[in-house]
Image (cartoon, rainbow, N blue to C red; front, side):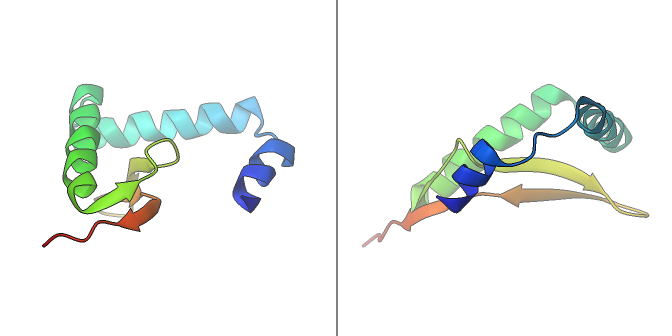
Length: 87
């Protein structure tokens, strides 16, 4: 809830920062040789698999590639509402 309030009343990101972040993501995807379609398919597959075991908040989830000095990492932030208990 606090996070929602921060989004509502918090500082808006400047368009320059947003453009810079988008460009950074494009360059990382290009460096990793991953198309936008592949990222969408990967995200959908991750949602499908994790949803088998947990109720997740798909609206607030974020899956992205991040580049370190020598490598690219898949980073996922997936809010979990509850764990499903299987028998």
